[in-house]
Amino acid sequence: MPWLIRDEIFRARDGKDFDLRTMTEADACFLRWLDARAAAGESYPALLPSVTGPGGYLLNNAERPDPRVRTRPVFRAAMDLLARVAERDGLKLPKAVVDGTRGGVHSVTDAARELGITRAAVVRAIQEGRLAAYRMG
Image (cartoon, rainbow, N blue to C red; front, side, top):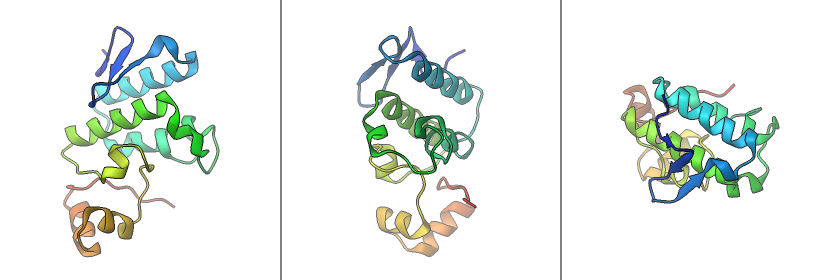
């Protein structure tokens, strides 16, 4: 059962509709798959690498993203879906991640600067499960 996709339409939090019928079949399939995983209760850290991680579908299996990927409707819809999963899980995300202007991978320093708190506060929030994070490498 889909979580956020209704009648092949994904409605973002800002009210923008993404019609899966106008996407490539691969993009629509990816978004349906991501939505199904979210509906099954997978967590934000489990879903994030599929969208922004090295080798992920949206990066065309590259290590670094092509800057043009952020303009694709499937990327914007996927980032909106991830933000909703984080909210569902009770996690606070930096604004740049929520609005899709920056990928989901931040350093502790970047997160502290973005949130206007100390690095120690970021680490504590991660340890307490109040801030989404996963370790790379």
